[in-house]
Image (cartoon, rainbow, N blue to C red; front, side, top):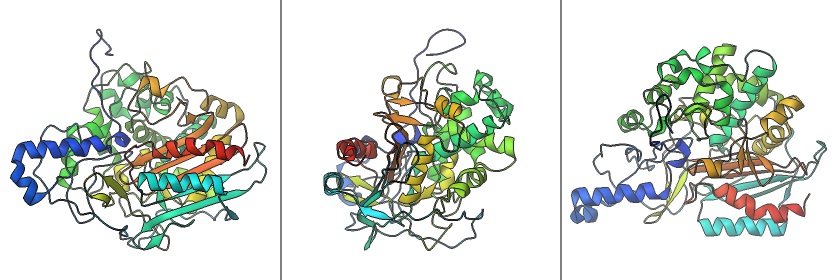
Length: 466
């Protein structure tokens, strides 16, 4: 709905994580066929497409350039067709000096093999989906925070000829939002900001958008701002076509979104948008004087010992620790099968989805997130008190039953999911049992809610472990 003068038809802006679906490729191919004729199909093959999910337009690892997202108006010329690959191809990981000191590592879990019933479910899921590989971890730590048993299953390949392991790093994608949201809540607890502060107090450019001055910190955490998805804009598409692997600044990402009118009156409804967390990253920097990732480092990663988790910014995601393999990103394509993707700059995601890490650290974070380990009890309760029903409010949203303050709920478990450009992820915590689940997949599945699907399939088997 509109604001400031009556209702109007809402123009749908898909969030970054929703632009990686199958239908985009299909539509792009069909547009190409119509434009250049059947003869070109024989000689050039299929055309690439835009895919973003806390992320970006994808390109194959053989150097094919990007094409615009579905929101783009102007088509681009066809690119050479991708080739099917029999096994993952490792991404280059140049050595650079990390921007922040690495935290002391948390004690390594004493992994036990996932019980047969649960592992069979995971194996069947991998076979059915055709993904390159995955890791699933479960902790039975009690609701009171006591020690439990840690289970792990790693299946398939992380890179060509390299199987997944507990040390494999993969993209967390939108789970990054839960880290950033936690920092914002900590700052609120410290009195350095208030959840009902207007974001324009910290990001003045928001005032340039009609109604932008009414947007609060709380609304951004709840995905209720009405600020458009930056990845759905023509400007973003054009820049990706100019430099697919180039870096983005937060100001650039916000510039694309803030050049558009709000999708609805702030606070009036829910719409999942990555732009909300780019804004919150800027809020954190304005309040603390430090970039959002450094605040996450000092407030969360270091205290919890999450040594594998890092944001590489404009560098390759393997740069923070070249000794740790970063899983190659993949996508399933109906015509070529499993296709390796180029690695884009994490700065394209920024605070909305730029973190990479391993399965053990994701499991540890899932417990801290869901249990409220880093927040006062009252603030954690507020975090998990959702006012939005994503499935009813926004059909394009990730698969949550409810969404609170940078955390989502599925079947009574709280945490976050992520998907996009060759990766999918999930971590969920049960307040009832104290159990935590983490999933990493290095393939963009036909269903972008793949980890949530697997999680729901596992729930019955997990009850036996509680």
